[in-house]
Length: 212
Length: 212
Image 1: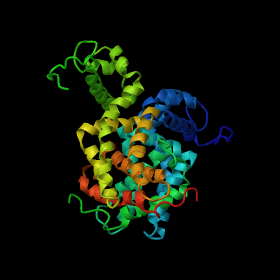
Image 2 (image 1 turned 90 degrees about the vertical axis):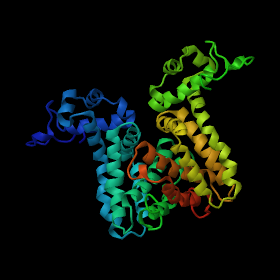
Image 3 (image 1 turned 45 degrees about the horizontal axis):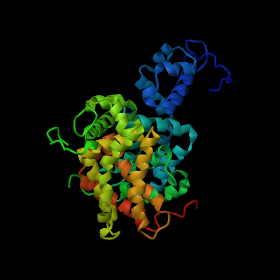
Image 4 (image 1 turned 60 degrees about the vertical axis):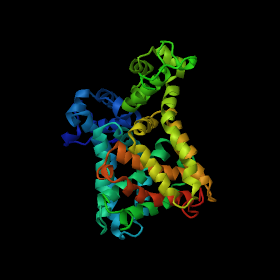
């Protein structure tokens, strides 16, 4: 994906209309940068095209609308934790709260993934497309699947409560950068929130009967 | 404060340059509406003045900069929970997690306070002025004072962890409106998050030594 990477021949789908290889990848990378830095509102197809060095029509050609390129830019970065799910549950539900907390924080501590996630969090507050992506990723794909492995009622509500703790930490530590939370050792935070997640996700007594 | 309220004579500070009483209150009310509905970015002094039916110069006269009117608009609504603090601690630290959770949710459930708080949360993500207000209110004024009453280390970190749980719930329930969390009975949420807050604020074992 670097500019020096050898051109692959015989795979025209990786070659763009402007003759350079992997223009689609460059567009995606530019979109991630722009959305992360500026948020959803201030990012335009035209800016993304400019940053990627392509014609705006090419961005539309590959991705369609701004919502669609946003989803693609974010999905690319959010895809990997879904792969981690089997490992999270491989040893059963004991300690799953700690493993989820460590996975989530690791995700934010990594500069490659922090930007795109930050873009989603910022954008989710004002845009339905971003909200749906966040909902789909954090609750449906990850936490709800964990809660569903446990014989407890209300797995979706439990997943959302666990997500609320994680997203709250992310907000205060990475977005608002409140001290001392922003500089605390990640393992301190893991150790502190893990019992909370474990309780929400697996303790039958943690959530009173819904609507009670 | 209603348009029908009798004019108070002999108190010129409550009368504005345009001759109507309490223009300052009208400006504040308009500012709260505008910031809540549009967020910090899209709200201008000119819009606030228009909504309040006054000249923009009068807004500047009373409040100064946009940051300052934002702070005033929000402070007005955030002032009351500070008064609740003695009651939260009157019965000691047993059950303080539940009382804090109930106070916080009540605040969001009340339409008079939800808008301004929403404006802060939305704006805090992108604006330092809003971030400072949120920090000052949620952690310094409320939770940190509670943690300081308990002989535990790291009261500020504990306050921020408690705040992270509350703000995360607010994000998912009131901003992103994830179901079933958005429609769950408030008392279900209080019962679920209260032990989390209690642990963060008062359990000596909850937070490992900072930097460990």
